[in-house]
Image (tube, rainbow, N blue to C red; front, side):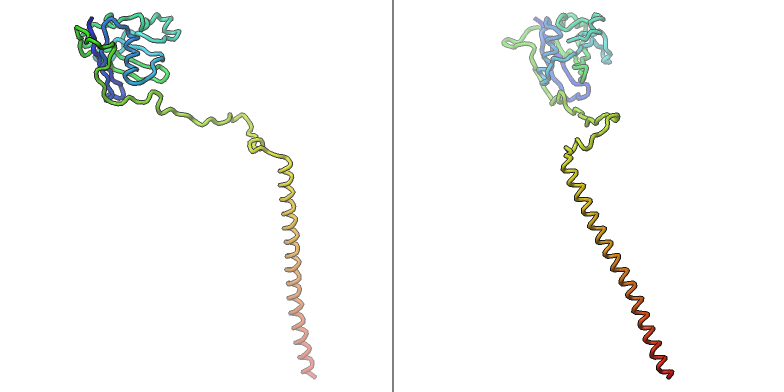
Length: 218
């Protein structure tokens, strides 16, 4: 049985490469699962291979876990297609998209065709691995969820408002204000007395001076 050796590389991380041997009579689903075993991803997500040319232009689609739209379009599923049925070139290329919700894209190229299987090897088999694959769900953005603008923010409930505590707090504030008013009133009276006291002191001095001058005239 012939064995295909494929080079599998991330489109955006071209230093992450796997070379995989797979038998020609195995399916695209076998290949799909082998890729994710090689890079450490969970494979149960909608994905598709596309028969491609040298410019990585997408052609016929071969899908896994298709949505209703793909089913209605009659897109063939991976478990129904053997690799040998889509190999028309000794350097055949496939464009591969994994997980349409959070996609990773791959460039897949046929490197060589081995005429015989290696004894004792279970296929598919990873024969070369370089580079560390990015995390499958890395850099996930979790925005802070704010309450809708139309909803009134209940501040009292948010701080576990207690009516008794509030009354005590208001009483303390009122008592403090009353004390301040009494102190201010007392200070105001003292200032008034000082002012009048100063005026009377000046007048007394004036009267004493006038009295001395009158006595001198006599």
